Amino acid sequence: MDFLTELHALLGRYAITDEKEIAPYIIDDRRRYIGDAIAVALPANHDEVVAVLKLTEKYQIPVVPQSGNTSNVGGSVPDKNSGALVLSLKRMRRVLSVDPVNDTIHAEAGVTLQELQEAAKAHDRLFPLTLASQGSAAVGGLLANNAGGTQVLRYGMTRDLTLGYRAVLVDGREINELNALRKNNSGYDLRDLLIGSEGTLAVITEAVLKLYPRPKDTRALILSLADLKSVETVFNAFNDQMHAEMTAFELLSRPTLAKLAQQCPDVRQPEIEPTEWSVLIEFSFFDQNEANDTLVESILEELIEKGHVLDGVISQSENDVNDFWRIREMIPPAHKKAGGNVKHDIAVPRSRLVEFIETVCSELQERYEWLEPSVFGHFGDGNLHFNMGVKPELDQKIVFAHEKDIHAWVHQRVLDFGGTISAEHGIGQLKRETMRIAKDPVALEMMRAIKRVFDPNGRLNPNRLLPK
Ligand SMILES: Cc1cc2nc3c(=O)[nH]c(=O)nc-3n(C[C@H](O)[C@H](O)[C@H](O)COP(=O)(O)OP(=O)(O)OC[C@H]3O[C@@H](n4cnc5c(N)ncnc54)[C@H](O)[C@@H]3O)c2cc1C
Image 1: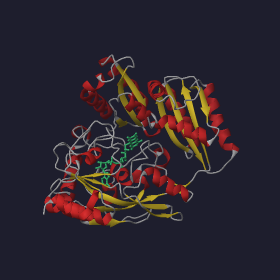
Image 2: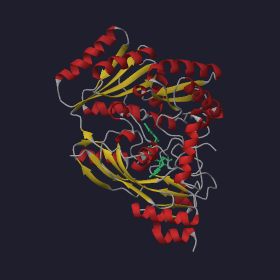
Image 3: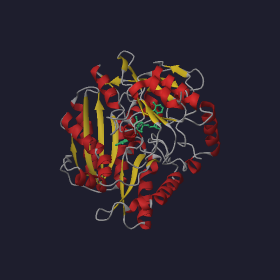
Image 4: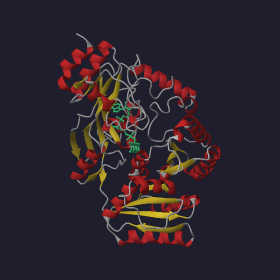
């Protein structure tokens, strides 16, 4: 018997060895990383994950866990000539229970974010995590990457939304901490260690997640602002007076919206006077009350009077809210369609964000006269998609010839500003070597030590997250 024969005996047709069938599992969403795998295993449930991992332990086969395969950092696909097994959780699609009294949902690792949201909605509950990749990104990957998205401002990241988990170690031993408790001070928190571990410590098979009451009313605004400094002013004005209701504050820039209009003309953009910087703001209310609108409008009037807001539109219906969000969600696909750009998922303290954008964009434009920044994202969280492209009339591929230098420059400046090289997408293979300068050396040493405890032979998602 050999590994593949035993894998076939275990999973039947769900042990894939045909090259063509393996292909979609070894290339990432952005088509930037293509690896190799000896097979793909598609277990149906937790017990089958245990059995597969015991088998890989017997033959010492490297394992790459994968859920939706939407990683933006090449974290979910193996290296070339890896000899690895891709362990895809995507058949594990059951929502195991919803408890609307405890406000919790228990789901398997392959349940997509959209399926989670729909299951919650069916019980008049909200699962607030929201990402443009929610049709594919799934529980296992959301936890393993500690995903963020557009509602972090109010509800936090995946770590803040997770109560319990079930996971399998690389040798097939399982950890069952499937509790649905909001308070649980009982020693080292392995849950929070596995969240954000990017498949390098254990395979997550199930999770218990928090639910919330559904808002009764939502308003979204798109505002054209006078300048970048006004973004901060507008944020502060709403944050001071409507902190509890403000569920999102997203920054949009003119080149970003221009590319969207060019690549996706079917996405309806509001007929307002465009400026260099605009924002998409969302408020969620738990009552339907005219006073909600009055407050939004009075803050807005003052901002218009002071010259910070030049034009704008307020949603009048749920359809409008959805249309506004479609603008934001279609930005990454539009960029991909246009040939991609050099991406950075950075965060700096919100108080330094404006200075960071102004300084680093002008530094980069001085270095590369063809460069066009395409900055957008979660301003309210201090997190930007600080992407660098090429002016529209030029060949978009130029930027990739300078990718390494641009990454190095941006990441060093992020660190100078007290920020992080990864706010929500993780490290994967893209930023692995940058960890050397981005992380405290002793913290890095402790991370390596933890890795050795969980995975002594380095078989789980090898060559990811930790620098060589
Ligand atoms: C269009 C688009 C928009 C996006 N927007 C956002 C955004 O706003 N915010 C954000 O945070 N991210 C965003 N992402 C990135 C991505 O969707 C998230 O990181 C998501 O959490 C990945 O989930 P996934 O199921 O696709 O995981 P995968 O891509 O399959 O895997 C991601 C990582 O988790 C590991 N992993 C996967 N499943 C498991 C498991 N069961 N157990 C252990 N490890 C596992 C993998 O090995 C890999 O390291 C976006 C991606 C795209 C393509």
